[in-house]
Length: 91
Image 1 (tube, helix red, strand yellow):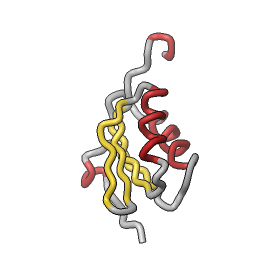
Image 2 (spheres, helix red, strand yellow; image 1 turned 180 degrees about the vertical axis):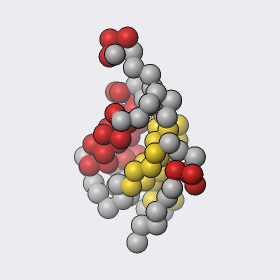
Image 3 (cartoon, one colour; image 1 turned 120 degrees about the vertical axis):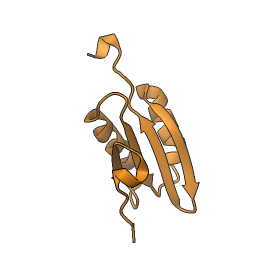
Image 4 (cartoon, one colour; image 1 turned 45 degrees about the vertical axis):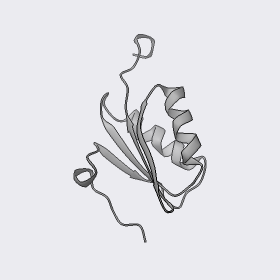
């Protein structure tokens, strides 16, 4: 059973739970969440797909968002991402 995590407990602006889903769902859900956040906000992504360990850093590089941390505790993965400010061409 997936225990809920609140934003207050996590230190993040928003938390999404992608546990039980597999590629490409965690990245799609991350992209949707980040799109609705303000620059500087932090997203906590909870996951169980081991592909997140390679996919999340690649997605952050491609989108110029900052990967603050990526950790694993057994099958539980946590990624913290800070939304970057849009570049002048993206506004």
